[in-house]
Image 1: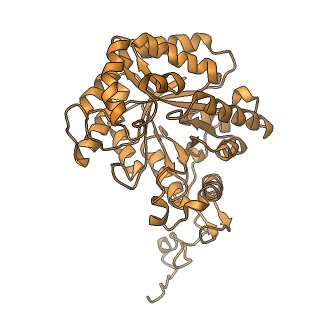
Image 2: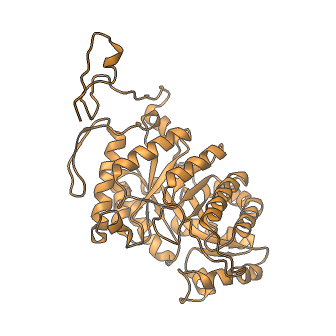
Length: 394
């Protein structure tokens, strides 16, 4: 199982000190959090995408390119990429380029997002959120898996003979997780394509997410991708750890009370008991994560939300505790309990192996027989002095 950290990049007031970081401070803190994630031995770091206050990360590709340059082994991902309000052509181009820059250490999670005003800002209608998600991913999937695409849809202009550039590294697209909190159609979509399904298990009861995961597993098998147990599942959980249970609940209480998600609802103890909000000592966190695995079945990726409301110093201390006292035990226990034949989380290397076996992967190159999108002329014609190229007047 992969273990990692995800963040939504929110800029919030620390209820203990009263300090609200600037956007610059928060972006730098997120950078330090990501680098620390690799240093303590975790596998994955994922960042969310938002276009409204109080969030700081509107361009995950820019942020992750920076993290990729600062790390060596860390798998980079998103949490989430907005498939509804982003043009799928831009997603195809930007994430393929990022995939090359980080030498394949990239996958991404697609989602609809949960901020209603974003839709009209990008010329879309939130009432069409689900059809947008389905249609846009159909186009993205084709752009990454076909060199030349002819396409017509409802929500954007059509494409004729279009090639998204750069082509994916080794002609293998980044692995896609479909993230959802509530929508069974997204679980169905993930199953149809044989992609991963990420149950962002925060805020809602665990029984709700088990229903969605089981739906995805069964439909994954229905579409012929393998057994239900072969389906690729990720789970998200918020974590706050301290040396003792009492210290953990006492330390997390002010952040829980100030959270726009939790405030005004059930008590901390009740939320922690009913949802994947993991608060406690290192052993209690270990037991809870192992309990999630038993409850949901064997899965491939466990992601922890660490910094929701926490200042940078405390978030980094949380990572130190996870790295020293929780991660080694989780790795040992999950490895021992995972049945033989359970698939691992896909990586670029494993996807290349699956596609090519022992053969060399295909390296796409521009086709000299295809013209550019402006003049219709080949970019290679000017290398032949006998060929005269006349550009149109503008």
